[in-house]
Image (cartoon, one colour):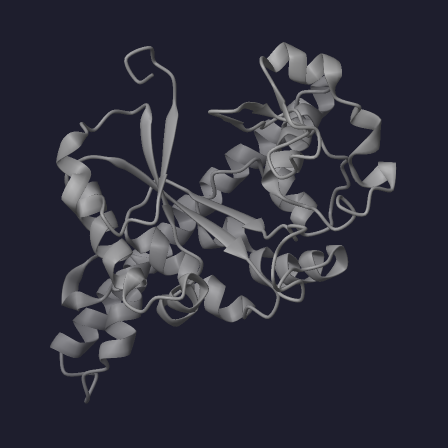
Length: 295
């Protein structure tokens, strides 16, 4: 696939990534998508195994050092602390990753715990608190800015379930990445032609779709919206350009903050070495000194 210049996102929990990294070669078309559901206590709790977070972070550092494209993939559940995730995004950025993907969890029908999933209004509230100033923070999300606006409740979309479909050894899953109510199609065209799309999406009244705001259904809607007209396209261009400008300002501010703190310490203006502040400044600067980023 890579040789055909197709982009491949290889998802991994990174537990065995270090051991198997030698089997791959860095390529702009190969992206290692590492599952991280928050900082160390939160992620280890989510995967029910202590130490996975540290293993994943070490693997990310090693992969980046060897020239691989690396992104993170995070699922948000009910009860997560917005403040913790703001710090998590800053720390992940400090690792030098190439983007972050984030989505609210989907309440699968067979999920043993239904109360861990956010409902629509809870999702909007959480993302407003967490991402309200993401552009000014310089956080690099691998999403359309329109989709992030949607998560914050600033835009409203209907689902595009055929936009990011799931294909596995059984075929093309019907109707979408998250639901398999209709079995499998032999081809993408068959998926399009034989699925009763009116039965799915929030407007359909289907209870399985009522609380869904995941990227697999709504990112395509956001992208389609951004190319739906010249005004929308230019709105997207202005947003991207402004986000890039704010990111440069944020990175320069963070770098200056770190260097100022170090200079003050070395000059004796800081009486006691505050390792936490040095680490935070280093993390914000993307600098791996002082053992600062076990993110």
